[in-house]
Length: 107
Image 1 (cartoon, rainbow, N blue to C red):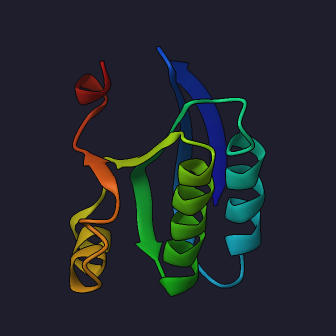
Image 2 (cartoon, rainbow, N blue to C red):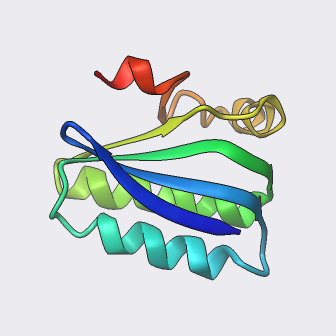
Image 3 (cartoon, rainbow, N blue to C red):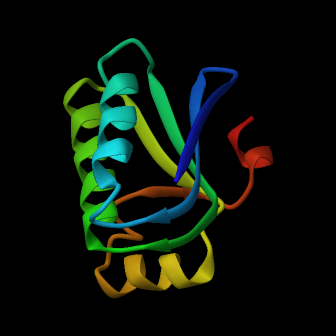
């Protein structure tokens, strides 16, 4: 898994690539918590290059969402592959997260 950061306007974008599973989710959590500490008002996880995510990865995203909400910030997901989106839908988490299709929707 690879993680990088960019900014688009008020949004801090965390780009994640590869597989997210129990073996590397701690890396995702560390990156999420580094940017959900109140220094940014909006955090967006770009999932365009995630080809697999298990429940531990989804749990990390839920934790990031809750942390940003506690700080009155915004948290969203973007460019989710259909396989991962279907998992979110099965758990009704597609209603829990704000989901953008593309970066163009952020502006």
